[in-house]
Structures are given as structure tokens and as C-alpha cells.
Length: 127
Image (cartoon, rainbow, N blue to C red; front, side):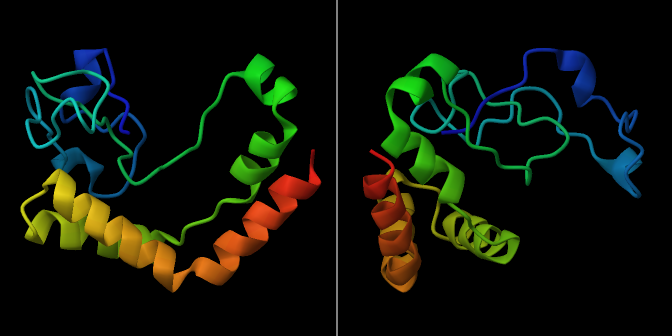
């Protein structure tokens, strides 16, 4: 699930983070490629902001305290930037459908099952 930025001021080409070539980035109004099934903003679009490749896991601190297994699992999950880029490219090429996202996710899980099993084992042991 993608989170959308609220402040439209980050969508101009001012390059607020000073990233090389960032001055050419201009997402424009209401990026419509992500609908409500992928973005919390809703059907009118999803503004990903300046660092779309910066993917973070977030969770409520109180909930994490009450769920040590979930906390352990979330702390262990790792995806390489190369995997993320490849999956994004493949998803784009497949028409960005929910079905293609599910298929690509299932393929990634199958290819990384050993790591996932280790993450789950650590989560179970954290109880």
C-alpha cells in the first residue's frame, strides 16, 4: 500500500532535497497510475513525492508492543532495491493490475522462500 503526500508544494520542480538531476522531477497533479486499491489517498490519484523508491515499513508503536512476533517480523523483512525496481518495471509492463501485482508478489515470495521462512521463524521465537 502506497502512502500519498498531502502537501502539493513538494510536487513542483524545486528539488528540495538537492538530489542530482532532481530538478527535472515533476510528478504533476494527481498521478493516476495508482488507484485506491494501492494508495491510501484514493481514486483521485496518488502523489508519491520525491523519494518513491524509499520504501519503509510503518506500524503503530502500541500495537507493536502488544505484538512482539509482528515486530520481529517487520524488523527482519528486507527487499533489495534491485528486486523492487525489477518488480516495479514488470508491474508497469503488465498493465498495473491487481492480478499482475498478485502474480509478481507470488513469484517473489517463491524465489525468496528461504529468507521468508527465516523471518517467520524469528517472529515465532519472539513470542
